[in-house]
Amino acid sequence: MGLGKIEKKERKFIYHVFVGEKEYIFSIKYEKTEDGHMVNSLIEGELGKKKKIRLKVDGHLCPFATTGIILIVAGSSVLSL
Image (cartoon, rainbow, N blue to C red; front, top):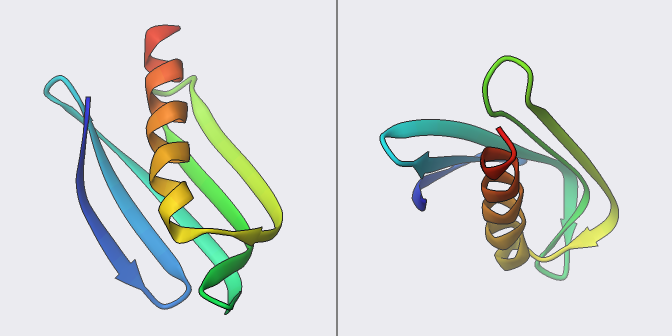
C-alpha cells in the first residue's frame, strides 16, 4: 500500500492511494483554514462498490494528520474486504 500524488484544489485535497495495482481516490473538503489547520472537514472515498468511506471532522484538523487518516482507513478497509 502506498500514497500516490496529492492534488490541492480550492478548499479540497484529492489523495491517490495504491493498494497493490489498484488505485483508490479519497477527497478531503473543508470550510476554511485557521492557523494552518483545516476546519470542519469531510473525508470521502470508496473501496469497491460496497465500501464507501465518509468521515466528518468537526473543528480543526492538521493537514499532515490527514495523510495518516487516509492510509489507516484504506488499509483497514482493504484488509476486511
